[in-house]
Every structure is written in C-alpha cells, then in structure tokens.
Length: 294
Image (cartoon, rainbow, N blue to C red; front, side, top):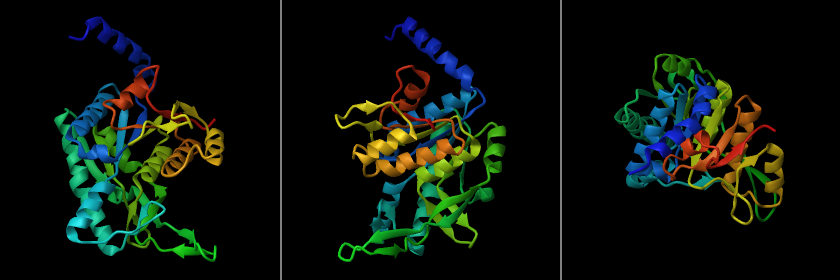
C-alpha cells in the first residue's frame, strides 16, 4: 500500500500550483494514438476533472487523424497528404466532421462524465467560435525546383477566435470539449489541425498553459535527452542544426505563436504516460518541454 505520508507530501508539493493558478485557464490538446486506448482516455478524463475540481478551468481541443483515416478506409475513400496535411475534398471533409464533431467529441464528453465532471461537446462552428480561412501551401517541383501552389481542399486555419461560447460554458461550471472544425466566411466547413486550433484558442483566452499531448516525450537533444525549457530563439537554433525536424517543427511553431500572442507558456509532453499533464504541472521535476516567449 502507498505510504500515507508520501501521499500527503505530493499534495503539499502541489499546493502552491493550485493557489497560483486558481481561476486560470489551461488549454489541452488531446490527440495521437493514446485516444484509441480506453485506459489512457480514462486517465486523461480524470486529470481534466481534477483540474476543474481545484479551481483551474480546462479547455480541451481534440484531434482524431487516425480515426478519420480508419473511417475513410472503411468507406473506400482514398487519402493523400502534403507536408503532413490531409488533402480534403468535400467527401473527406464530411467524414472528418462526422468523426470529429460526432463520435470522438461525444466519446470524450462521456469519459469526463464517467470521471465525475460535466462537459459539453462543441466544434469551432458553434457560436462562430473559430472562423477559418483556407490553408495555402506551395511545394517545389523536384526537377525544375519551381514552387507550385497546392490545393489542399477544405483544410483551414483559424483567422479569428470568438471566446464568448467558451466563456459561457466555463461560467456554467462545465468543461468545453472542442472538435477542430471551423466555418469560413465563404460558408464552407474546414478541417483544422488540432494543434493549430488549440494554439489559437490558448492565445485568444490568454491561457496560463497550452498542453500539446503527443506520442513523444517532448523535444529531445541529439543524444536523446529531454530538453525541459526552451525559448523561440532556442528552437530556431535547434531547428537550424537539425536537432528539431519533421512533425515536431509545426508543433513548436504552434507553441511559439501561442506564447507570443498571449498564452503564458506551452508544453509538449507524452500523452501516453499516465497523468503526464499533472506530473508536468504539479511537481517540481516536470514531465515535458516547456516553451516560454523568452
């Protein structure tokens, strides 16, 4: 049996953090393959309910790439990707909205309820929470080295965030669970990268923390040791020397945008580790990579 004294020490260690951040907002992006694990989902929901119970206001933004891919495969719809972004035609956009705003969103709401919390599932379309614009991308032709425009279809990025819906949900004592779907001024529905969506919402809310729960421990140096504290200048240097590459680059760009636009700090950490978010925030040792504006 765990020693009662050790339990008390853990609570005492967490107390200053409870006091410092009572009434503040944490935006948490939940995604990756951990979403398909019921045990991980249950742990995540318990963490979110605990945050709410100690006076912190969690706002959840979830992904669902693997689930969208599985449904598209089941329906026989082919997918192509450019720079990690799914090319989204009308059929794919409809499936993405069905999976994200429907199955995944309501499943997470159910997990929060099972953990004793009250959540409400919405998307960026509800109450004009997130207005999206079409993503513009270019790629270089390998033979001519000429840049060419790439049409990603109904893939968007946030151009405006109206937090009034979130404010209303939070004031009602509930936890917003948000699907990364937004409506454009052109009337179309756009699929938005969940990291990008979470970063834009964290900036608009002036959140105390943006947590990006991923499938890696955080940012690693060339010897595979975790880097615990970074600034935008550090990230630029590490990207230039090749330490940071691949899918970590857009995640860190999201963190930089968020902290430079009003979020106090952002954290990249491993969502597969049980209660990683609590370990990062409520203990001195932490559990991921913290990014501040400098």
